[in-house]
Image 1 (cartoon, rainbow, N blue to C red):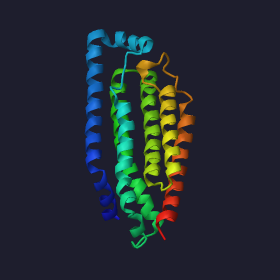
Image 2: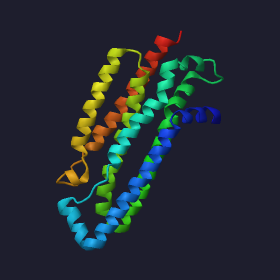
Image 3: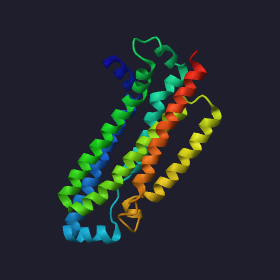
Image 4: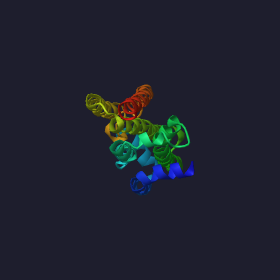
Length: 229
């Protein structure tokens, strides 16, 4: 089992390390920005600016999460699609389902690990400066971003592995539309007049992840029928 996990990890190793490094850089950048702003305006003054002027930004961390969900989704499935390696996995000493789960869950878990690291670190940063209400409002935006990014990762894998060109085009169109909807219901804190504009975003995001899972399962079934005899 360890060999199979390592084999999958090697496909996206460079992208993963770069993503993890960029995430730590963004977290440090946010912490330094908050520290400098609070030193300049005082904690009370900056909190008032945050509440009334939304003087806060994730410094492109949310866009970074979406970008690397795409990159790791592509890199984790590209060689399987290019070389039809899933055919060979029927001869491995474990079930086809288990092998397919390794293809998807290995990069998914590594990606989720970085996202959880971001949430934990930023929750600690926000908690050290703000009260619970503001901390929860800020961190909820990041949590929604993580949920959408994981769905985007699954959709990307389904696009790469799908053998039917029309379904690929349809999935890409759906993905682009979903990204536009996402940015309208969960914008950056500094771009919305309300902290809780994204109150109903969770319903959309749960549906999005469920849709992406179903699409990936369907794409894998189509791939198996089309390429594995």
